[in-house]
Image (cartoon, rainbow, N blue to C red; front, side, top):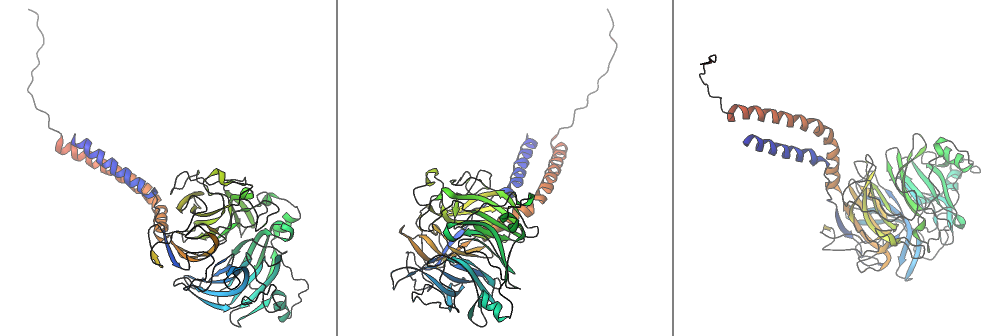
Length: 496
């Protein structure tokens, strides 16, 4: 009996050890670092003010610094929202800010000059930290823009695309440039900027793909994009994403990911619905120049599926959305936060009501091709929770629903600033809060499950077999009683 009990204990312990590497932790922490808990405010500790749709460049030479240009801001002097063209350097660790260029300084100038880009939002921003920052397109005061500008950090001035080539004494008559657009998909690489789609003049939605080379300072439409535009189809173009604007993007090595966005025609930034929003995920291979459909529902207007909270399964799906924030952690997996679209409720899909503002945090495992809901609110239009003192992790604190926020990654930390969404009182407007989402514990645990999986699959089964064999031999030696020897004599039967 004791041997059976020992083997049962060994089996249970071994089963636990085998299952342990596959369990997952939801240890994601939120920290309100700076800014106001109310909309349309200029915080005393962060002079950026409330804004949405700015263009950001992560300073990859430092841990948590970034550059921010323009966006839609709240002007307390005018008591209204307006576009801006100021340029800031932000230390995300403090956080603190330093203005590099004041732009038009709120003078109501709607157009740029020959020395300054026009105010804008939802354009493309990228560059080389400490050397140059470029912006392209976006929503202007009157219409979408098509201009390209470069800020020289050393000279501390702006130059237009055309002027820069003229100064280099190059013929600019044949300079290519994408058509005017805003709200395009943007990937900022070390040596170039890549854009896809966006919304153009008269609400035309694009599906072309362009790159701006920082070495030559030139635009080029990608080869397969030209073939697609000219309707010259081949096997590489069959999975080319549909036209869209407002998609969420990620960069992972040579892979460019794209999620969701608006695919409905006649999109209006001030009046639209989520029935045309997508929740599909694509991946572009830079080396091969091809797109691949990865995951998600191809139909637009789909609510979120929170089947197993905290776990990666095929049944989990983020709701359709545009204007979400995308971050890649150190393990190469994707994080998605917020946006505007549909929450967990099927009735959040509407062709009449405005889209729900979202505050859900999702994690996509690029090996399993599965989503997991990790933190935040399942329901849309949720007010922010600003517990405790600033710059301190407090249980329950988390940002409210928002879209077109400005976000960058710092190791396994997401830095989130502003956007359009809900404050602590549930009021909607432009936000000025600065949040830190700490994923260190989760990413470390999640990475360990993969690194230890092969080892555990090999080591523990053999260990269990060895333990069982030793236990069996041990039991026979010490617990089995020896047989009793008996003297028996046999004799043939005789008949009487």
